Amino acid sequence: MHSEETAYNRAYDQRQYRQMLFTIDAYKSGRMSIGTLIGNLEALLICLINVSDEWAARFEDSWLDIEIVYALALDTQLKQLSEEQMTAVTETLATIESLVQSVIEEQPEKTTQISDHADRRAGC
View (cartoon, rainbow, N blue to C red):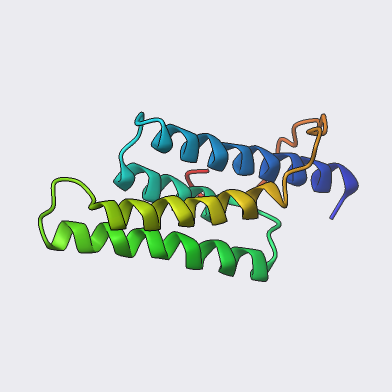
């Protein structure tokens, strides 16, 4: 892989990580539903280009915890999460935030755009 492409991919992933934090913040501030939070976090994970299997598995495990809480709430036809469910989601989001913070670089790199990026995942 060329160094220019590597730098571009790293910058791209950094934007996805920052978008994950923005998504979590939007949920926590009430600007996003839990269903949208779950869908956005999953999509952002899928869009990552250079992510370690270990990091992705840890993220996915935490993400799945939130999805299960939401699925159970839907299954029991709750209009909103119980206090216990909210606590579980809040704690899990803190874990996800910590994971994301661990891979965010302090200053995003400036990159040049690569015109032919055939392996970019669809919809990212």
